[in-house]
Amino acid sequence: MRNRLHKQKIKLATLLAALVTASVVSTLIVLLISSYHSQKESLVHTSLSLNYSKSKNLSSTIDSLFKNMRSSLENTANYLGTGEERSAEDIQLQLEILQSTSRYFNSLSWVDETGVVQHIAPISVGLKGQTVTSGPTKEALSSRKPSLSPPYYAASGRLIVLMSQPIYDKNGNYKGIIGGSIYLQEKNILNEIVGNNEIDSIGSYYYVIGPKGDLLFHPDKQRLGEVVSANPIVSKLAKGKSGMEIIENTKGVPMLAAYTTVPEIGWGVVQQTPVSSVNVMLMDHTKKLILYTLAPFIMLLLFSVFIARKLASPFMNLANLVNRLSTGETISIPKKHSHWNREVDLLTKSVIIAIQTVQKNTHLLKRDAYNDQLTGLANRRSLDETLQSWSKDNRTYSIIVLDIDHFKSVNDTYGHQAGDEVLKHLGVIVSGKVRSEDRCFRFGGEEFVVLLPNTTASEAFIIAEDIRAAVEHTISPIGKAITISLGIAEFPVHAESHEELFRAADRALYESKTSGRNRTTCISDKIDSH
Image (cartoon, rainbow, N blue to C red; front, side, top):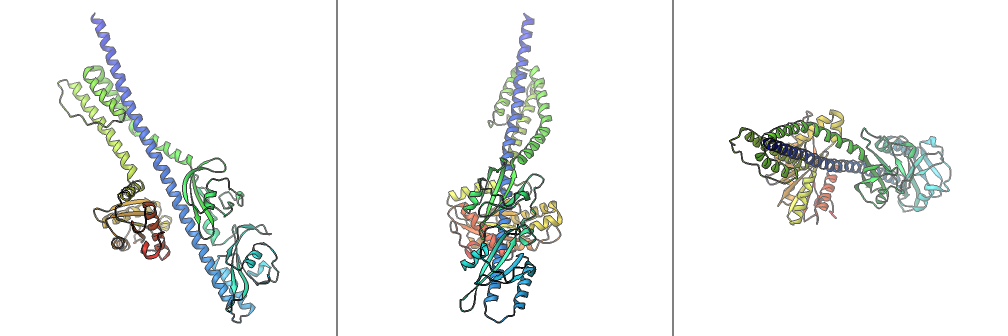
């Protein structure tokens, strides 16, 4: 009879030990799954945001470049159409100087209204005196309007874009066109900006498409000129849309793609990263998390099993508590009461420590999801939720969007580690200059956002200028001061939604950039928010 009871006691202890094992392992799995999904969402969102920022910056650069090209042609057309007597040598010299010094165009030509090439630079092109009878030049000549041709292959095999500007004399008489040829795959400013694209270490790259979906710039030079209209984002770019999403490219590879149009010319810039690269980073993160947490959980498991074999009844209560924790239920930390049995007392304290560890890790995961790890400021997810909440409440507030001028040169000159220190330096200044009720965020890259509740745009301008001046007059970690550009918008004065408000402030920031940087622009000052 005693042997039977003894055996029954052993079986119960074994069962309790199994329950504790299952509880602790479940807790570890819940922690890993929670971390996996949180980190995956964060990595995907960060990659898409970074790609969008890159594509947007490159699109803005191309857009500005073509505007400058157009301005150069307009000035030349005015020069040729003034009616002043100029020798053929003077005109030829003027074209050659413009072509060689600006490096905008690989060749410049003056084609008169009858289609005869009067002058061309460089003269080595050899078309002077010939008559244009067809092709993009003929179309531009007939239109009598400023134009930019679609990319086309010339007889020489070059992929070319022709930008033209009509010439009128002072009496309004049509005198032909001044045409600038841009050889897309040869040396010029455009090619220096976008022609050296390569696939980086994680497989990320960009490409540029023309208005008909043909590849103009791509890391794979063999694909230049290929029409990629099957790509799902090409049709969106053709409609002037910009955005970011997960797609499959024409080769069936899943990509984190961001795309932006170039308004001036109708081209599109696509920056994309393989989804597989995110999975690699995610697996590395998961392995490290397992490595850091496995030993503490194994120790806790062994200790719990040992105690379970010594005490049956008290352990049941503790096992139930751990089991509830493993399901994700929020529980209160048990009070530390001394137990008459030393083993039970130790077990109770150990379980309390385990619960605190799990809740602390969960808290850290949540905090990481809403805070930028580099600067300690709130991140973009926190910004989105705050904007949604404030806009939903119809709350009056202003937004300041700012970023560091020439930040790429900081990274290129001093290294990315120094760049990170500059970002932290800026975060300290910004958070130190705002009021206690204001909210500071790192939006991504070198871009920061400040939300000012119950603040008009004019009041926000004063705060923004205070921040800008403080940054300009403070020595940064690279040994000299940096500068920032800022854009301001007010809700609901400048927008009816937080998305529109952010875009308005971003356009104001762009105005600060294009107006010389190191300045603050309010959306109502320069730009129509609609």
